[in-house]
Length: 65
Image 1 (spheres, rainbow, N blue to C red):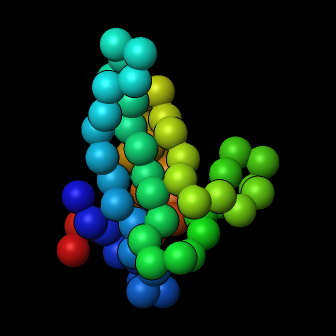
Image 2: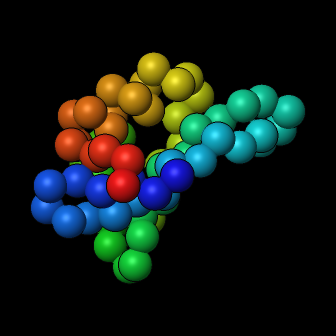
C-alpha cells in the first residue's frame, strides 16, 4: 500500500512472510530515506507486530493515498 505524509514523502507498506512469520515492512519510495530504530537513515524498516507499525505511521504522519 502506498502512503504519503504532509511533507510529500512517500512510502510503501506491505505485509510479508519471513522465516514463516508475518512481518510488516515499510520501504521508502524514490530514493528517500526513513528513520530507523536509533534514528539512523535507512531505506526500509521491518516490524514484528502490526500495532508497532501503525504507531510509527501515525507518529510520522503517513496516510493512505
